[in-house]
Image (cartoon, rainbow, N blue to C red):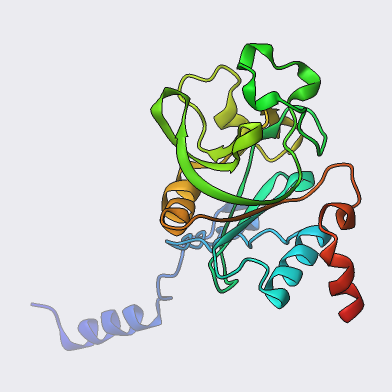
Length: 230
């Protein structure tokens, strides 16, 4: 049986022992703090800023109601990007686009009557200007948004079975590889199906295509009036 003095001594030793703390590795190094858990939902990247030309056109349309109560799209060719607005001028979405292989702002006369195999390299341009666009049927019974029916320029998704890696071109960060089409404007599926189609399905809308080469006031002369009024 343990005597009282021995029991008291054992209790005193236990209370004097240092409390157990975190393990300190040898050589005086401190343990690395645990990495903070990554947030479940990372913040979305900021929307790209519109180019000065696109800003000017957007401001002019909004102030003058040039869209005549219809939805509209601004195609910024130098930036290879499309901006979608509703009938009241509210910006809804933006997306990268694929454009005509060659830079240029005019369509070759009579190009709408040519087959794709008859179109020369220099003719593969996306014309600049203001177009009243409506849905219609293209080759292969495909429904597209005709930007300019006379020159066979339409806005649609990437054609099935294309051999130019168009999806990769659309998703790349560079805009140099966005020039690949015969003149049509290719847009992502979500931009087309969830934005363009519901808005343009009934009455159509306007498409404003910014120029590559021409002065922007030559393509949209009313910008001069808008600038003077400002």
